Image: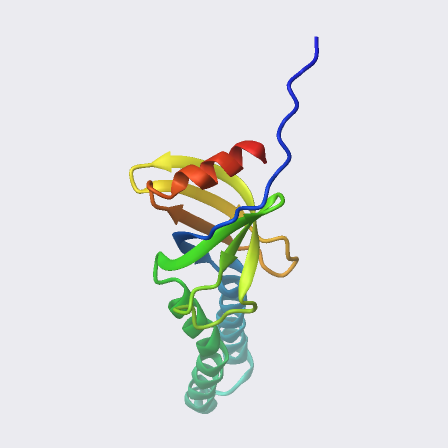
Length: 159
């Protein structure tokens, strides 16, 4: 008995309105490492400097640590404001997401999301996935309105 052949993934002819939220794990790790180095450096300096130099080193440590971590914290704050409107469409076996204009830091105008899970919820179709880049370990969550989720749901059935 022949098994049914799964449909080949198809490109979508239209874009769908959606919302996307990202978790920048790499930025979180880098900012945590910088803060850890600043605090650890301050702790080790206290072991080797005389009491009179503590005040000068304390100020310098916090200034260097603050300057070092502030760009990462700014990017994380601007990109983690929750769901922001965007457009999505399907190409072959990947979901393409347009980078929202609300994101302050965008390495590219659109990105290909490797779908890990897709669930129906009250808010619509919720798709979770990652990017296939060695330097970006974050997760992206895409929420598609129930009215527009049917076309994407049909595409997900073929992938």
